[in-house]
Amino acid sequence: MTPAPLPLAVSLGDPAGIGPEIIAAAWARRDAEALAPFFVVGGAGIVASAAQSLGTSLPVERITNPSHAAQVFGRALPVLGLEDEPFRPGEPTENGARLSLHSLERATQLALEGEAGALVTAPIAKSELAKVGFDHPGQTEFLASACSLDQRDAVMMLAGPSLRAVPLTVHCALAEVPGRLSVELICHRARIVAQALQRDFGLERPRLAVCGLNPHAGEDGRFGDEEQRIIAPAIEALRDEGYDISGPHPGDALFTPRARTTFDAALAMYHDQALIPLKALDFDEGVNVTLGLPIVRTSPDHGTAFDIAGKAIADPGAMIAALRMAGEMAQRRARHG
Image (cartoon, rainbow, N blue to C red; front, side):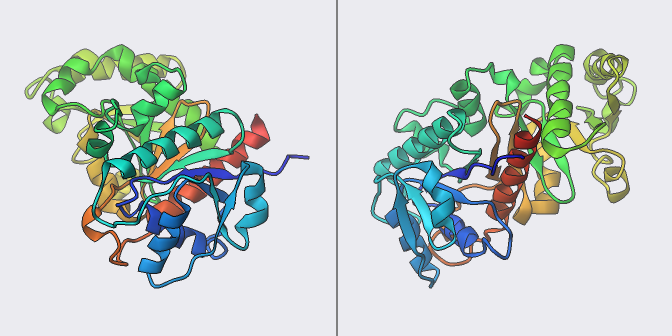
């Protein structure tokens, strides 16, 4: 018999952003959305106040151990720990950033120690975290370090109902992208993506499609030679290893409705090449998934939205989708080890 999945650990995100209110809204819709039990790390008063700003009353119950979350989840939102801050929507503070960082670190630790089935991270403000010692470009890089992995081993995938897309280079200037691409990088990250699609998404033989870097995928070298020198040789090497992979495809054609039916994940060469189509298609249900980790990690694919925090207009759809995806991935890992 497969043991019951462990509850999901949710990091608070920046207390001044929309994280607390979309967490509260997700808990309120837990039954309708069939969400797995989850608990928040820190910020009990913040989440309760965020719910009040939405015009709802949220029962919050502090817990001292993640194992208590499942018992509490049906009647109240479980919150682990005593850390808290005054609720100031739209007004980030250094104390709030410290709480956000502590919540992220503790939630990650719980997942790594096997006390939580998965990690779901609410949006952070990287500029605010930098003021309190956070020296990573983003949460993906933080998680690689926390899991004692090389940065290249943690792969960001954006996933929604219409598309899964992976930027092979992420947080860097566009001018740096050509120099960062290599046959080895593309092959390494493509293998991680394919293996994760099998293990965590249940796809027996995932189909990968690779974007070109240049307009028209270089058009035989007329608009750049990265496709000929780097991308096509990487694809050929992966085919020789048995992967179902195609490309390089022009980036302006790969995300059309018909083309999207031909692959399970698209590998893009840079950040916006992956994120623009994902957000255009699935903004309210887009999930940021980190592949290649020993733990399951998901996050809503949007930011803190300080400008709308506390105004009762933030859509919790992406947080709900992140919680649902984390629960499904955790169940698959629990079944298959």
